[in-house]
Length: 357
Image 1 (tube, one colour):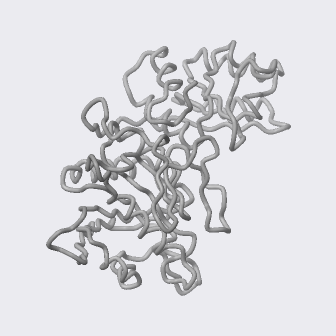
Image 2 (cartoon, rainbow, N blue to C red):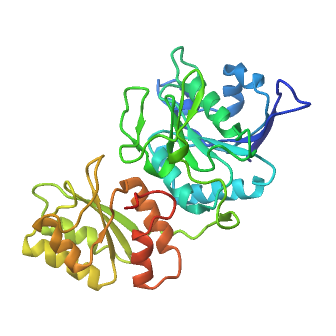
Image 3 (tube, rainbow, N blue to C red):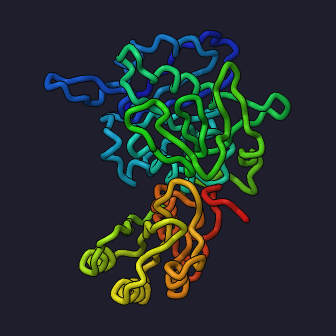
């Protein structure tokens, strides 16, 4: 069963905030087995390696999943579990920190940004490139600073400083649905090329106020559970052929496809390719065009090699990341919408995942 642990605090009589730390697994909490492979360990073992957690002036509760998982095994059902945990604890805590493996962290942060609407409290993902038991681990700094950001309040209003789903890693706080994992061998694992950091951690926590979404949402916080995972990703590459494209687009019951194109949204103009996409769209498939580039945006119609996509009904994804695009598609398709409403939902900025203007 899931484990709930209360951590002693430095000043239990007057804690600055109440935080829920959710441990899902990941490198941060791994240890080596007898074969020399890294496998998840129980959070109680992590606690012994991080005595600094007892020094925070917060009320800290840890919710550890019964069976911590490698993030390569994360699934939409796990995202819905996280939504449930946050919903049932939302009124009791001031902020939430989720320990998660780095490989799919950007997908999970993106998904949670759509599933949690009108947030008034921070939900911060973090993890590590080296396990907490290693001498040069980045785990301590990442976790401890994520907790600081989660507890931070505006001194004038008392509201959360960053009421968003975020990723904190290597001294930078990023909007979750703008981040991508870009490094596997260095500590600066995540970047957000198309949107500035929300904050940086140096000697002080420095906030980029103009980049942070408002702490006063237009309505109550909503915890969505509508998700449709009948989606796919099709990446363009020189030499891609009709058999591959049709196999990807003709999967039974497929409802949406993220098309990863070249540059500013360009793709082959070969008749067979155009016809394969037209056939898919005629069957009701929603195709969202995103760029393979980390920086920049899709501009359908800028070149002939993207104008044909626009003309046949492929949806332009602007500067959305692939991670945000596929999870946004799952979220939008999970609602009972008409084809026109679905297309509008995929192009509209829902949680700051695309740039306006």
